[in-house]
Image (cartoon, rainbow, N blue to C red; front, top):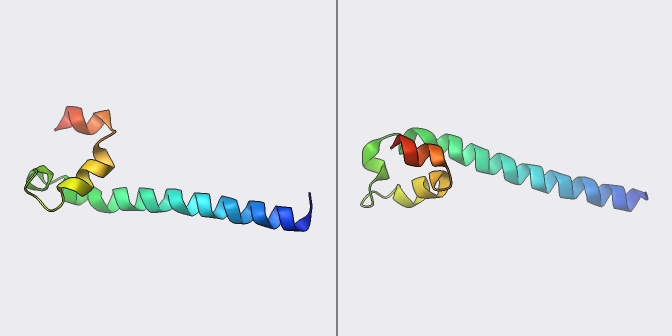
Length: 64
C-alpha cells in the first residue's frame, strides 16, 4: 500500500470516528434535558431534538 493511499485511509477513518463521537456527545448532552418530562412534550422547543436522539430506541418508548 502506497504512502498516499495509507494517508487517505487514515484521514477517512478519522472523519468516521469523529462523526461517531459527535453523535455520542450530543446524546450525552441532551440526556439531562430530555429526562425532564416537560421537555418531551410537542410544545417544548426541545421536542424535536429529544425525538432525534431517542426515537429509534425502544428503551425510551417503553420507559416514558
